[in-house]
Length: 167
Length: 425
Image 1 (cartoon, chains in turn purple, green):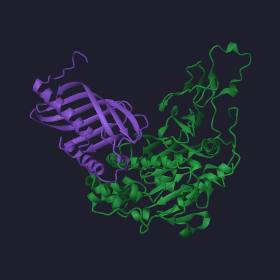
Image 2 (image 1 turned 180 degrees about the vertical axis):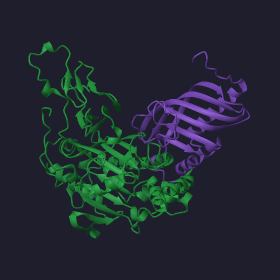
Image 3 (image 1 turned 90 degrees about the horizontal axis):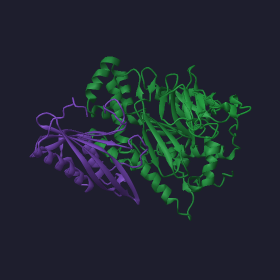
């Protein structure tokens, strides 16, 4: 980072609340508690998994996932229904998140960057995914919601098998 | 190869999906012989542009030469065999093998050899990168064949041509582009499952029930797939090509999908102003796709808005590239909605395609059962209609399409292959 770039400091209280929410979100996903997972998001939330390394714009290019809250809800309707064959049986996952960095974004938003390693097991097959999370959170330290979750996979441009669990 | 025991009027043997020797023969007699889809011209529009891919398991580079001509080169140095190009796409006037420095122009000619005094008589003209014997493009779709002789691409495409035209002419200017990115899949099962499944009208309402239920939840319209009441038909188009033609059954379902998408109503208003009522309906439907699934034997599928390319990588390993297309001559936000519509179903995290791939794995695992054979492909046999030009029409869920594919498979596998020339052209 160059000396001229100013990253607004984030206070201890905000940091603790933001980190707690990111870890809580991961725990909900690993427990496949999809309905309560949705409640962590704001009404204007987005869930974005870019396809191309360095991709800045989800609109003009193809993505792996680019959901607004309505499509996130659809995704959960599908995953919790009886006919999502690619999740029957479901993936078991565990993710390890580290390297938290915080950046203030306006009076009521904070951006949390972290790295993750995710282990997935399904139908006798174990796979590893990894990358960077960026969570944009809004509210107050007492009441934070996720406004945008971005998942930059390090293998985003490689061929994939079944990635129908949530990253 | 005696294929009469492998493909019968009622089905195919499990061996066609699991036998290594049959697979090796496919690489030779199908991918090493017939016209194989390589790339779309919009991916390599300018001189020097290239894209790497595979024909069968052979690594190739599709290039646009300085003259603007298309070439398909085998991505293998003629000296000691290393790949000469490491990237998916790019622009370069030459390819240099970084092992010993041999350099080739983008038409394949050998232009540079370090320290050539080590050879008394190096025949550079004979040591260019191997060029596919025949390369032809139809409406921007580039095909290549290792066979020096054989039927023209037009003849090979047979009645599939009409559908390639329809797909391309979804654009008001008759031009589509495949430049916004590609989903890439890999699955551990035979390549033919993806080919069969792309024109399988029977599975749609079963495998994709979760997707169509969500569509119905938003639109209030019941799904129109997967039953015999559907006005859709399947067709054997000749030479192994086949289609599910759902256009008559789509009605205004695709329009509803647009109207219930974010920004959909505003887009429809913009289209009405620019194109008028009738063309707006056509264009709005085209956001979801052409209303048919076309499979061009052996490796190209046009489905929805996408170009799908099937690449075998072992008897039970397959790569699939899926490129959604955009249309030239329409508002950018219409193309963006097309990308979003594609993403909903396709991609490794989509609501539809992963369920298909799940089934391929289940079939491959099921075929470990040695006691049972064959797999049935008999659905609709008694109700097919034969039209002029050897076109066979079945109901939307009939296995007419798979029978078409295996007729061509058997024809190619029985014939002596055109061996690729052992010296570069």
